[in-house]
Amino acid sequence: MLQRAAFFILHSSFFILLMASCSSDDATEGNTGGNPATDNGKLTLRIATQSETRARTVEWKDGNGLDEEMMNIWVVVLTNNSNVVQKAFACKPTNTDGQREIDEVCQISKGDYRAYSFANMSVAKVAELLGITITMPTMSADDTVYEATAVSGTVNADKAVTVNGNSFNKFTSTDDNGFGSYGIPMSNVQTIAATETEKDLIVVRMLAKMTISVKNETGAEQYIKYATISNVTDNVANNLKLLPTLNYKDDMEAHHADIQPNLNGTPTTIELDIPNLATTEALANKATREVTFYINECKTGTDFNLTIGLGNATDTKEYRYALIDNKGATTADNDKWDYIARNDYRIIPITLDDYKFELIPYDFPPIGVYPVSVSEIDNVNHIYNFTFHDYGHFHLLPRVTKGSTTDVKYNVGSGDYWTLNTDWAGSWSTYDVKDGTAQPTGNYSLFYREETATADADDAGGIPVWYANDGVAGPQWRPDVTKDYQPFIFGYIAEPTTPLTEDKKIYHEMKIKLYVDGTYRRDMLYRFYMTLSKDQMLYAPAMGTPAPRRSHHQKVD
Image (cartoon, rainbow, N blue to C red):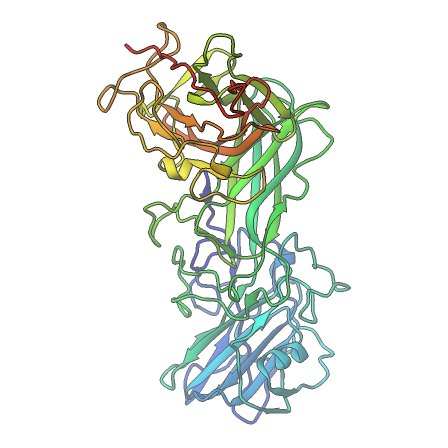
């Protein structure tokens, strides 16, 4: 099962929220340390964590975060309620014992403020992003809080920024993360009331983290030949907004699903290659391979799909997993997977298995016409071709097997079974060609007869429809008397109005959900062309148009 981790403790229960704070002794005098009083008309700003007590003696620790994921520099800009900048502070904390953090670094006069907090961004970059001027002394000493000698301007933080979070690796001091520093960029804004005497300033990472572990239970060693995740926000210019979207800006306790994506409009998405999962090294049976990487925050109205190509030197089998199922989910749901927000940490365990999904075509041609044939025309993407030699009624029977012989039944609700992806419309897709133009009518180039039918019968149908095959709304059918009645698809290939000069084609994909021991395991996808061959059509010799064709008969119980 997919899971969220209690990684970086804040809000969405994933990536850590670092707490950033900064300070000066009062509105006019700087202070680089000390042990400030708790009130006396002063406001104490400090670093803390939402998961620990606020006592000054408590040392903050992040059990999921790595040292490289902490703060290398932080910058805090204080404004009044009209966003006119009042003060600015910055510091370069060092790694003292595995965590970069500072505790109680300043006091200022109490008042109404807005605090714009940033980490792993240079002072100059923060000033540029906010549209203000900051004159900061030379920051020559680490662990020293520096206060700007002059500030001016009105902050405008509603800005789009470029975050190159996909496969992020800017962790050394020679790197530039795009914000004039190194490490993961972080940001936030909080409101401070004049009645407050202390404040923990929180910064939120601007990208997400993901761990994928793949366990091989196929019974033999396998090679992962490719691995991708779909619908990921690309590393394109101005893809995200500068500040996070969250409700609990000051609460240091974790609030599940509170942080939501704050994209700049609808930036370009890509199918991201998962780094280091596909290698030339075999994955032994019962072994697990795990990789961790960073990605941009993203949001999709459909599913994120993780696709793994598994095989040997000559063949590849494709596995597809729906990472997100947002049907019926709420913001309080542990299964809220219709987005990946900044600061999230997503843990995705995958099990490779030996289940197979296929569609078996049946047609009912006149005497002397070849029956439908099946061929695999792309053994990398596993695309099949169903070649029909005459127009007319057909069935497509979905079949799921474990190994080569054990049938997995439809929708039995326990044990191993399969279901439609959502409903028929959510499972069946039509295109002109693979990766081509979607066909909302389901009938590219009028491949199918334009006739509506809900019950299977001789010569019935048009565009393919789902048939429950339960005998309630029509007769039951099965290809073999020893088989159980299982649902199928039926339709009718249209009679050509003129002789075909080339084969006529239409492309379909069918996606289902596989359940193992009653628990969702993964999505399964079947790709295929329906092809009407030009070679055996029964054309009238004198008319040059299709001749009347003999009705077929199906087995009805």
